[in-house]
Length: 328
Image (cartoon, rainbow, N blue to C red; front, side, top):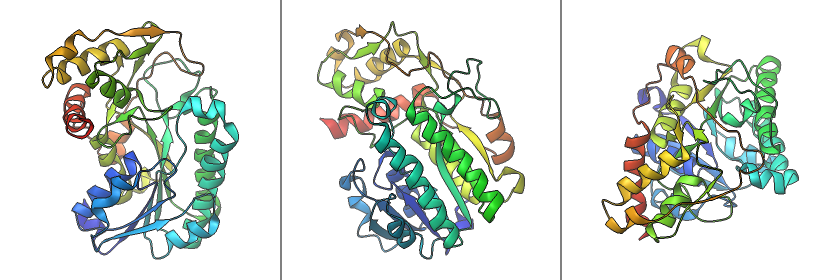
């Protein structure tokens, strides 16, 4: 796979973030020239510190809301992995304007810069939130509902813009609808921390995690290595039929929040037996949350030869080991 990227350059926007820094690490470990664009609003400098001395790594400190920064980052680049965004449904509900500025205006800037730089392929982080109020499971790419949050609207608009840029300017794109990604370097701190790193931190501190609702809501939790695999397949595929569309990025199984907490307890208690006895608390369901999410990954398997290696148990075990070392 990586032989196709020899002597090529890959730009990762949001490269200091959770997913972005893992992508940087993968490319650099395979001696691929890697450019990171980040404004460090949510990305963390420590995520990329190990890469700064690598001759194949270039950091461009800038903001995707600034078109000049986007043009600067795209110079000499062959492929773009666009990860930069403001995530979180609650954040978008609290501040829809900033979410729109980053996720829509910033996305459009990156498309324009990629077009002008004659980038070969633009792969971008889409979202499972695009399925909105469509209740059928599993989720298949061609059937969506109405968005349930400002964040979901912005990610759907990304897909519309990507489609238009291919049809109008010939820029090949692939959208990756991420389903609840987790793994090393996912930030457990802040008001909008994702559920898995937040719960891990709380368990380690013997604090009770708080579940929204009764814990029956379920998600297709997806380990970071599965996401990396999909990004690499997306920029290296030679299958013309695989381009200019969107894919679910998931494992293809769902886990309730109660089941998730039990898995976290199981693996964390291997380091600290007292975690077995930490109680779980509950509160009301959160506005904008969908009850259940489960992806079909058949399209990705068929067109991109996607083969997710990590199920929820294996992914949690890997993630918990990393957090234990880095949060203690």
